[in-house]
Amino acid sequence: MAYLDVFEHICDPLEQQRIMQVMTDLMAQRPRIDYSTSNYFVESYKAEVVCFETHLRLIKEIIRFQVNEEKKHNKHIKDYLQMAYRITNEYTNKKWTDTTSEDVLREVKSRQVVQGGMRYQDIQNMQD
Image (cartoon, rainbow, N blue to C red):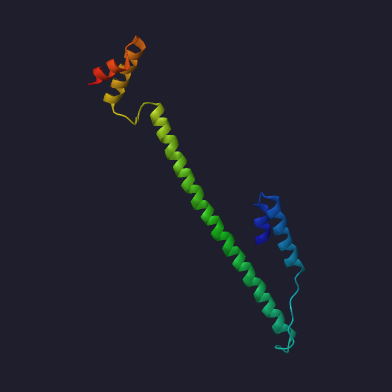
């Protein structure tokens, strides 16, 4: 079931093909019975079952770790975007600026002077 969960969440067709091959290989795998070290079929079969169960636990742990890491990363991105949207909203609603009010007034005055036809040197003299 662990590989099936992974397969359902993959978007890349090449990766889907690789997981399908892993799943097919696991389904085709048969218990290896070693008569040289074990005199009984049951002992060898139990060892293979334990091996499959260990493999399954490892895969589940890897999936759980990956999901947790992706959740942390997504939360970080979400927090950053919320902060950016909040600052943008405050900026557009004039609740937050990156300059002081004196700088804004000075800039407005200099733009009015330029629109009135004065030269740049005259603007500098006005600011001094």
